[in-house]
Image (cartoon, rainbow, N blue to C red):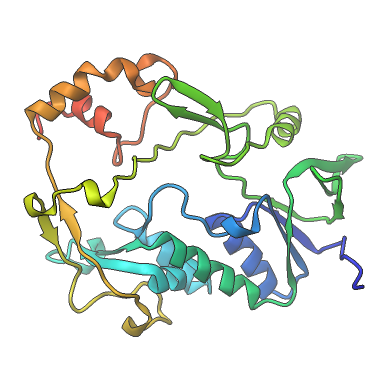
Amino acid sequence: MKKKKLSFDAIVVGGGHAGTEAAAVLARMGHEVLLLTHAKKTIGQMSCNPAIGGVGKGHLAKEIDAMGGLMARAADKAAIHLKTLNSSKGKAVQATRAQADRALYRGAIQKELSLHSNLSIFEGAASALIIKGGKLHGVTTECKTTFTTKQLVLTVGTFLNGKIHMGKEQTSGGRKGDAPSIILAQQLHEIAPRTGRLKTGTPPRILKKSINFSSLEEQKGDSPRPVFSYLSKREDHPKQVSCFITYTNNDTHEVIRASLRDSPLYSGSIKGVGPRYCPSIEDKVVRFADKS
């Protein structure tokens, strides 16, 4: 039986967007790398928004791609709807945006990671950092396995002492269906007492068969289609699908206003200012009441 490797040049904790990129670039540089994740099947999971790119984030995907990263290539393999935003304006403000099939994206990321023989993956949640004399020596998992390293990359996303708000209901969780990382969060707070909390919002998914598509405005993807990666071809794209546009009206707004007390943003459950360019539907109705 092959002996389990317990010492690595670098360990990456978390298998989301940042963690997979970090593990892959370390492996490309020739290091022996361990990617530590609570569930192998969710490596590369698009937890919130199944979109890649856009005016605000498209340049980041392109920069990662220029450095040999994974996101743009995976986006091309998963993109089911592609558009060039601001196509009527100059090149400086144009951006590529893709709606991605979440399962295809996750599969593409996992396949990319499997190509690196010096990248190991261990399924287990990190529970504690091993620190001696003010120096990092490794990490211990919840199943009591200890890995040693001198370089640790924490890409834990929403899991550190994570809370999930669904209307009036509050639960602990890294994301829906996954437990949060409580012990590691407490240790990090002891190391660096000044901590903050970030918020992300996830829109509800709508059952397709409940939608009357005949009353919606169809929006096809661009033709010819843009590609994200400098290394991709249009032939890499899966079958394309249309998006559909709908609008709110005064009746919609009245329903939302009457239900604001049930929104964690307005009930006091969540404190802080939401994002400027991607607000929730109730935030839009309150902040931009003059628009429809």
